[in-house]
Image 1: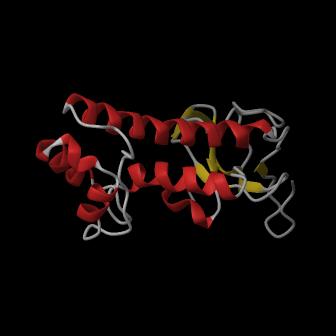
Image 2: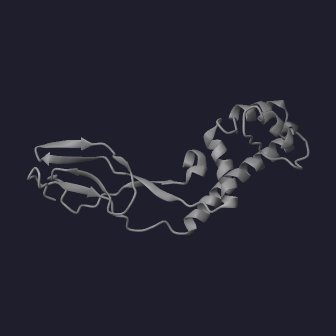
Image 3: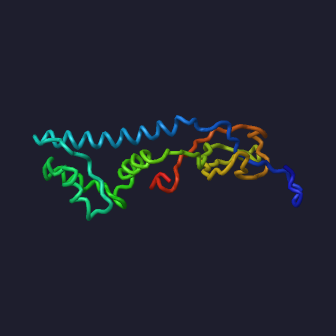
Length: 186
C-alpha cells in the first residue's frame, strides 16, 4: 500500500483465518480435563489401596485455600493412604493460589460439567525468519506473538521485503484460550 503522507510503499502483514475450530474440539478438550481429573482420583484410590484401606469415598482432594486442605484431605479420605502421602499432597498445593496448573485440571473439569468449554483462537505466533529490506543485509526476525481479534487484522506494516514476495503465506502457531472463568487458561 502507498502511504500518502510519506510517499513510500509499505507491506502489511495481515491475518487470514481460513477455517474455524470444529464443534468437536470443545468436547475433546472437556474429555481431556475429565480424564486428567479421573486419573488423579484413580491415583488417590491406588495409594489408599496400597495402604490396605478401603477406597470407598476416596477422591483426590482440592480445596479453596491452603488452610482448608487438611480438612479436605480427611473429607476425601486421603488420610487413609498414610502420613507420607498426605505430606506429598500438601506439597502439591491443590488449592486456589497454589499449584495453578493442577488446580486448573479440577476447575476446568467442573466448568465443563456446567457449561460448554468454548475454546477460541486468541493469539498467533509467526515463525522466526530472515527478511531482507536490503538484499545484501538480511535481518533475523524472532518469533512475533500477537493477539488476534478478527480475520483481516493488520499485524504490522513495514517497507517491502525483497526475499518475501507480496502474498506470501506464513505458517503460524495459534494459542487456544478460554473465558475468564478458566483460571490460568483464560
